[in-house]
Image 1: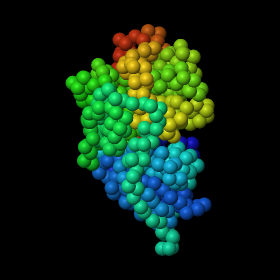
Image 2: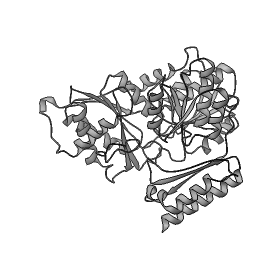
Image 3: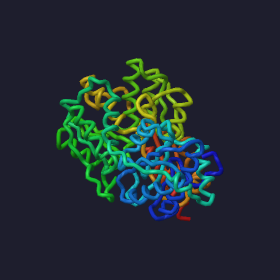
Image 4: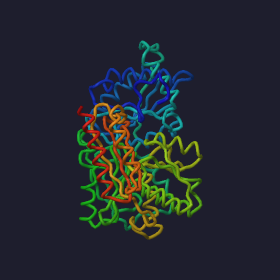
Length: 449
């Protein structure tokens, strides 16, 4: 963030271990109040709150609701809903803001909060700065006659299911497709199966029985082994894996092989370009595979890289006036459909193309040859400081200058976890592994010293 007033907001809201500041009930109470004060400055405001399925969501939902009410803001409770659904419903309800209680792909013992503005976009930096500033003020309560009211939205799931179906042509029917879907025991457990089955697909479910503790546990878009095995065992046409809050998607082809975010963006871009609907180019990130960039170059599709994070992809899309962007991890933004990364919507675009072209998922990937890429996540207490250490910098520069690798090197701190992410990509896989091992070994040595 560029605003020095901000202390709590990271690249994707506020996130951390439950019970450790700031992910505590008292802070969430104050955060709800602070946000409410900012949102209610011009008029009586309405704010939506949704959450994923982790057990602490109940506690934080109540605390945020109380804080917002104390600031005079009305609250509409959505219950467990995917993050992109909350972005959509915030617009549909003409609310001043939407609040998501989620830690995305993290384990159940983490949680967090992120905000959408009334237009369904991430909050502008100046609004986050205003909330930060309000957090440092004494908490006051409006007169009792002006306290905010709360209401539960009982048809939120049905509204979002219909919205998702409407993002593909009306004549799209998935009859004949057998799909294994893994909802990560997260927020899409009661939306994605309905979307797919209502479009005619035969749906086999994994990760649709959340208990508050099993979100992302060995399932979902970051743990694909169970989905791969099930796709092969069921002789399914395709597998779909969402993460805990439903803004990421990875897919599995009929052979049990991963089709990641880079390939999915390529598929969507290639066919939208053929139909004259792409509207400009595509935004990837510094992590996007070199093979994707080369494939777009062959197709004559403009391609730009943003810093890692869907927030930055979105900023570049808006700056360029483009509509499609995404990350290797499966954050895919289809701006003609929704205002944020939406795993369900992205998957539907691909499924519709499979039916339209009479092609397998693997067939749709034709034309993009991925360059070997390896990513290691190293747990360190001070990722940014370790990355800047002279020995780590020397190891990075050595790899960048390597003429055998013929690729790219990227070392960066995670924006959401205490990790240093090391990516090495290149045409010579043996040399790639050697250089990756050298960098990671240097990082571990420096971190231990």
